[in-house]
Image (cartoon, rainbow, N blue to C red; front, side):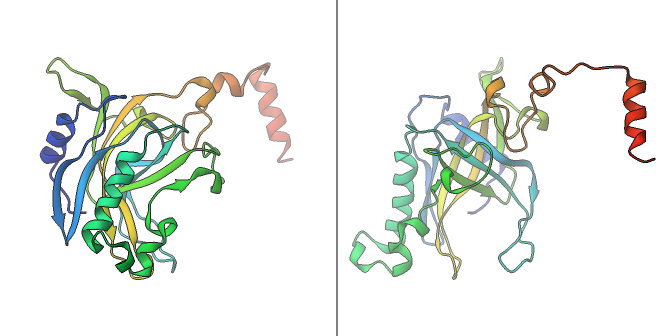
Length: 239
């Protein structure tokens, strides 16, 4: 998707007073490369593989590194309202191929390949539970990152400390679907515009990809002895 300035993203984000429970709606509909794209607010989700403060290059199928991007996976629990996201994806397909599905090319008829919604049960990662659905959103430019709280000026507070947003946190985002023009893998992807950190996970939710470890739980029942004796036991490994 075409990059937008921080000011533009921030303005679009703040106009969607996006705390949990507020209906998602489209913003800034536009045509880019003949594809209509619309900004949509996600439901409440858990963030995974959070890479929103600095871009990261991922490997291509041929083993080469692709372009570095900002990215995050949004994991939606069962019962989440995904209809606004799905409708936005349908709008992209309709804009590209028209409303007559009989005229769609084969690449656009396989919804499992075209639609960007994935079943967490098919992935062997911590936090990817049966019944949950996830999407991946990426951006060439840094997304707008906020806390789900307002400052004295009434605006959502900007989040700048990377330690405050990590995998496992509950988040909401603003994404925009677009048609992925890749010959061997056409379909819809989500561009990433903004992320809101709603809350940290509770103690029983912290075992997650890249998230913080619950130190108290990990060391429950451990009797810390004399540090010196512990050191000598470790030294014995190298005798």
